[in-house]
Image (tube, rainbow, N blue to C red; front, side):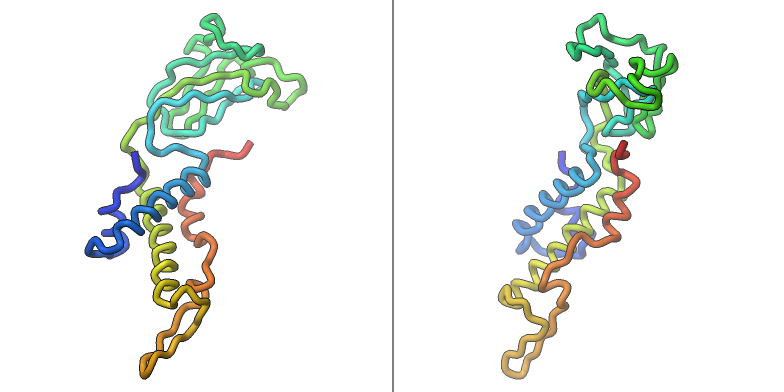
Length: 201
């Protein structure tokens, strides 16, 4: 499922008509890929299987809010047979932030105090709601499409030359140097996405 529709993106960008639909569709796909890679999350929702280190008492899932936990298995051999499944009474799920917290101490005893040993020894199968992309994420996608769209239109009008001014007869056009040379992702978009990023542990 896409993060945002083409029609909604065009409304956000005040674009009418269908002449640039192919370009906008391509930019929308690129913007969605960037947002999901930058945040480390899949906003479309669904069922996910993740493996995490077992040396601590908390696990930070990549996607949230969590609607349900199908299973949580702990296995130092990483085979995750049925006998390795933990009873749901041994952990709590903080759905809003996707945190699974063991109430009986670390999932496996760590090698060293404070370490997060036993990489990929916890397997969690869980689900998040579909069709519930946060409004701020949709706005970030639209703004990124708009940023790239302006660059593409400016460069096309300038003949894909790095110009700040172009005179043709009595007509002189000025171009923003930042648009003709190409800018990195605008800081405002990154700030909007910051609360949605998977924590770096």
